[in-house]
Image (cartoon, rainbow, N blue to C red; front, side, top):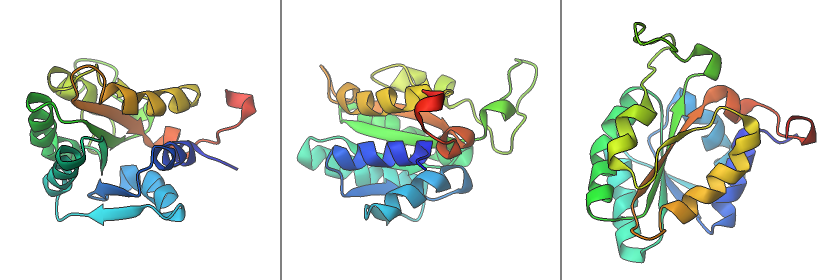
Length: 179
């Protein structure tokens, strides 16, 4: 059985990455586990900004997009400076942010949050990404979006691409029945 996290991990491996830069947390754990099972090195920094700047340095040296993984809430807000840096310096970077489950996302403007450490990643990152940030809310979209981010981050003028990845999408079974 493959789950959403497996699809994303397979795409990262298929794009030739042997290392991703992380500051672990609960809402990104399924993807971390899937990458670890595939032998991808998890470069774990002391904080999200450190993980982001390590990835940014490699991206600048190689010209190839690097992947940063952070958890929801403070994980997202702590990597904003790195995303802005990548945007203004045209550095290809892929930031995948864990997120609470889709059923727990706040849907009303009067409600600040429903889930623990929920942050509206898409709204926060929109002004500083080279394409509109995406929140994957349907397992059918995982494969196409995760493969497209590698193109988007290095297309025309390189820059950061941010994916908001809810827990239920990472853990749901990925098969022909739901595609």
